[in-house]
Image (tube, rainbow, N blue to C red; front, side, top):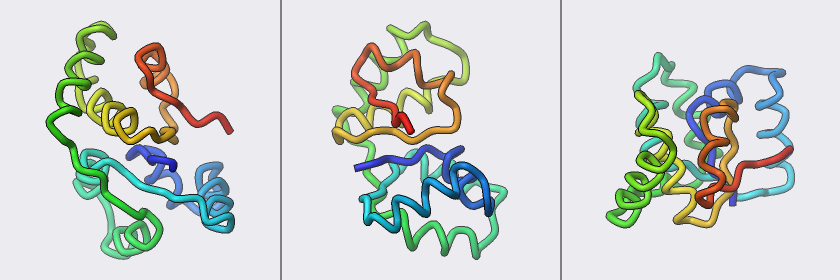
Length: 125
């Protein structure tokens, strides 16, 4: 299972981008794709066109809910990774991926790499 973060999905909708090529590869190989409900919410905040939402809805399988145990994990990640301003949402996205046992596909490796020591698996392709 691969979880997409918001930035990866946005860039994946740009024809010919590296993210687009990866998405097409995963779709051809029927790799299960999902997103945390947190990332999906960020995506819907846009700016985004209705057609882009419909397209993304076709290939993003589940929107994985943010559960109580994810809130505890997100707080741990936030506190142990330096309490960086603006990073709480990234910690929430990472917590859902960790709790789901999924790899996270992101275009913001620098933002998420600091969470790997706490169990986050970043997609390495």
